[in-house]
Length: 333
Image (cartoon, rainbow, N blue to C red; front, side, top):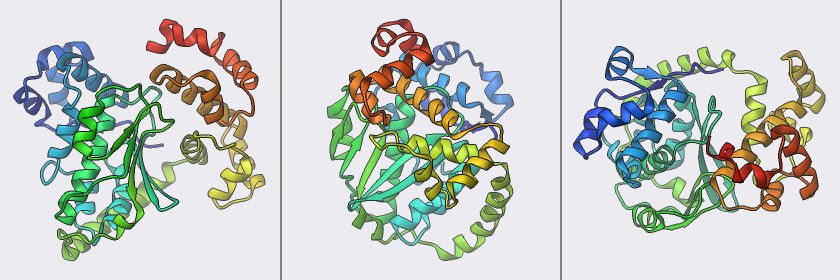
């Protein structure tokens, strides 16, 4: 499992103050102090999320994530983004971003090609709560900025899909230049697959030859810390959009037999069903709390064959029905 350490750029507080954010109030709301951030350059996922929720609450600026994400290029790049910027084309850039992002923080970049589209998503491996909106917006803005900076020309996504209720559509459409879909099962940035072949004017093979051996060594060192349960959780999470999750499908994606997968999970002290229930529960809470999807739509997205099955499962998890949970304070915690 990845270490729960998220980098906080030293200039972040200064940048927030420069755009009019009351940093003192942000830190108070997040229950952090300047001395804490000065003493350590990394925080936990929970602290990082609390910080960005406080920024959103205090600033009231819904476009702040977009602005900060766009400003990352060409400055303030982590090693994953730097390697991506100097790749030969957009597709290779995204592969490098996905491969090396986990070296920076407990976050994974997923890239899936479906029907001529490249679906890009960011997963916080150790998160047990909804990712703050500013982080989602900032991540997608950073990818678009990478594409525009690397190709040297405007790069317009096909669409952006967001797991949130409709809000700020005009701002998002203006920034990305494409349609924005709300009440989505997953947060996705969708590009035309053909855009992946776009060459990068920032390609620098000499720099990559210097960087990549060290990055690959770091990846090799980190890989043994990942568990089969971690991988199953990630694959299940990506599939919460109407697919019927089966151990056979997961095993096939992990290139092993269902029997081998189940045996390895048992050796790790868990089961496929336990992980499926865990991911379904987290996904159900996220969708009920952050979208206008009704219980039947949520049940479909989680792969339940009928609403009653979902309702029974949810009651076992939360002790109440989906509708009552959504109306309660639970959905806001």
